[in-house]
Image (tube, rainbow, N blue to C red; front, side):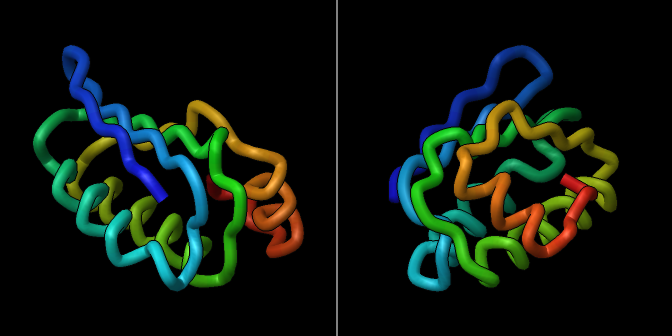
Length: 95
């Protein structure tokens, strides 16, 4: 998994490429949590996620909660078919 981060204006943009699984969530969590509070908006691009499990879904829920607590707006700029299917399977409409 690779994570690309950039800040454009008032928005932190984070793109994930590869797996979002129990084996990679710790790395992604540190990358995402480091962005909290730095800018008012976080854009998360999941269009290149190739695999996602329950740990990945749990991380997204934590990020959603933590951005809200930090007063940040969270948006997904892309969902791969894998992400969309996982969210649908779990009936998660939050993200």
